Length: 265
Image (tube, rainbow, N blue to C red; front, side):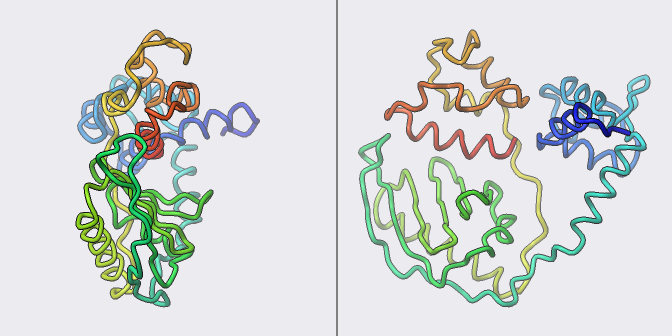
């Protein structure tokens, strides 16, 4: 069973990726063929994901059959036991209202669209983490205490303190409609008292990451092409900060989208 620092590092790296976590959860119901696993999580880089899980001693592969190792079974069991007392309770959370749309500013990346700043009250604080499963492309950030939601080009960030920001909005009418839908979704969950169980996020593919990279193939990240860099982002071999052109103002929106997408990997 992994125990020394290097082995623990292998396990942490293997389980840092959503696809590999999905593979582990899929195997918890029994042994599977590589074809079955590919049908469940996608065949993109499947061999690579299985190799990392095998190197971490979490799975065993024999003649095309994949199964959890004893350590893998114990690892999942330990994770499940640690999470059993974390009930998504919303019974004490009060319904929210959008109290005002304070600012409508031109977007940096596209001056024909707007960045909206609004207020939501009462502030939701830590309840935002419980609400994350309501949104297929939503993630909660402990670092900034905010729920970040992506829908098409629009990125909405709901902060625990009550502020709401939205990017790439066409006009104030669209902003108010989107905010009203957000309020309704949150209040429906609050009325039930318990948020829905976490659901599998939309899978992110390398081409989707590539779409928001500069596509200049400048090589500043150390890779020959932006697509190669996108593949390394998917596998966890590279981090977004290696793409220095993204810090240029013209790529501000691209960087914001990529930060959201890489959170699902």
